[in-house]
Length: 68
Image 1: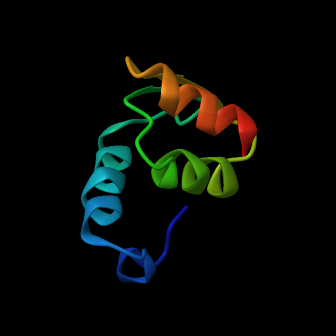
Image 2: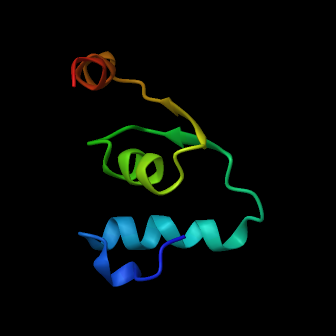
């Protein structure tokens, strides 16, 4: 999947990606908090067949994500 975690642009993404090592299946993700969407976008690029559901409590974040 990701051969070189050091190639990820920041420490947050490197740490978040470690969770993938503890799962046998990588076909459905639930993201709690969209933030800037970096992790969601990275998963979508690396695992294009995956279903990604994202929940955020701030409607402004959701609007921004739909706009982009």
